[in-house]
Image (tube, rainbow, N blue to C red; front, top):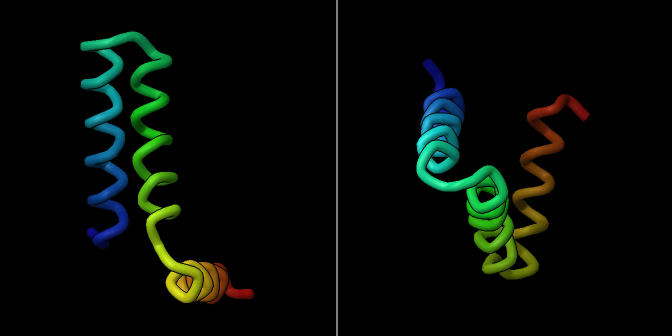
Length: 60
């Protein structure tokens, strides 16, 4: 199993636990807010590199 698949499964599991323990909107805010906050902490060159790697993996 690839590293990305493991991370995806862990994220879905964490989302389900949050949804059960809280309401849907709080769980959605946490699941979307953490990756957005992490992306915003990157500097300009790191964001550019991340976008370039993402496009390359998509075959563009």
